[in-house]
Each structure stands twice: as C-alpha cells, then as structure tokens.
View 1 (tube, helix red, strand yellow):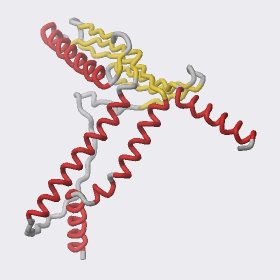
View 2 (cartoon, one colour; view 1 turned 120 degrees about the vertical axis):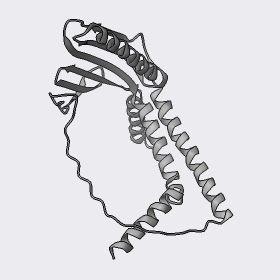
View 3 (cartoon, rainbow, N blue to C red; view 1 turned 90 degrees about the horizontal axis):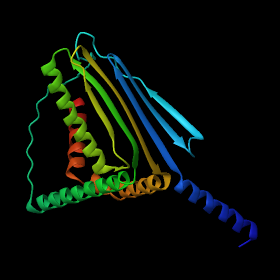
Length: 234
C-alpha cells in the first residue's frame, strides 16, 4: 500500500471515530401560558460550537373552551360486495406461520429501538407548573391528578431512557384565581455512533423482512382489495 494511501486511510479512520464518539445534545423547551404555547428544539454539537434551533408553532386553542376547531372531509362510496373463500389446512398453517414471524420481527424491531433509547442520557429534566381553578377543592384535586400524571411520565422516561440525576418537578396550586402555566426543559445526549449503529440495524432489518411482508396475509388482503376496487371502477 502506498504511503499516501495509508495516510488517507488513517485520517479517514480518525474522522469516523471522531464522528462516532461525538455527542449530540438535544434540548426540548416548552412553555404554556394561557393561549400562548411555545416549543423550541435545539441541537448542539461539539460543546455548542454547532447549534441549530427549530421553533415549532402550536395551534391556538379556542378561547370559548378547550377545543380545537378543524375541518375534516370524508369521501365514502356506498358499495356492497359479497365473496367467499375456502382455506385449506395447509394455507391456514402458512398464515399462522407468517403471523408468528411478523410478531417476532416486530419484537426485534422494538428491541433495536429500546436498546438505542437506553443509551440516550437525560441530563436535565425540569417541569414546573402553576394550576388553579378558582376553587380550593377542585384546585387541590387538579394538582393531585397532575402529580400522578407527571410521576407516570417520569417513570416511563426512566424505563426507556437513562436518567442522570433527579428530575426537578414542582406544582404550585393557586387557590385564588384560574390559571394554568407550565414550563418544561429536557436535555438529552447520545453519541452519533450509537444512532448510526441503530439506523444500520433498522435498514438491515427492513430489507430482510420486505419479502416477508409482501407474502403476509395483510399484504395479500390489501392487494385483493385494490384489485376489487379497480374492477368496481371498470
């Protein structure tokens, strides 16, 4: 191997290792105050030297109540089709085998995702809320319900992610007026190498299981429905 080619290969190897060891920091910041909602997602690389921020707008709630007004269009075609199909024991066994393989692959897919999420470190978790309904009894009940909800979310996060330190959580019940304010800040970190490995595993999994999905009962049923729709149009 020529000397210059060895140098290029060595530098490329160092670059790959540097990228794999680099930590990506994601900061989620959410603030809610009456009808004002703000969500900001910040990506940090190389200790903040590279920074990219995304501001996500929210749909404002209806001031007359906790409603979101939206338009929905539905298009239906009234048609009735009757069909019968015979299934032999061999075909039934094949379908059961396909269901079993699909279930095993879904479990494997979940295993890949959970293995990656466990390597994501949550280094900061602050969630502060002020709540009040204007009545002491209902305010206390609302605060208790909110405590339970926050505890469940923290338990879920600690189960799938790696929490560093203790989450900072507070709920301030305001018995004097109707109010709902909350601020949430979550900072998580993971190495790019772990994300790349998880992505390669998912690509490998998806390629190897494409043929299985095409032969599955779900795909066959969809193809049969599409064929029936084409015949109906004709």
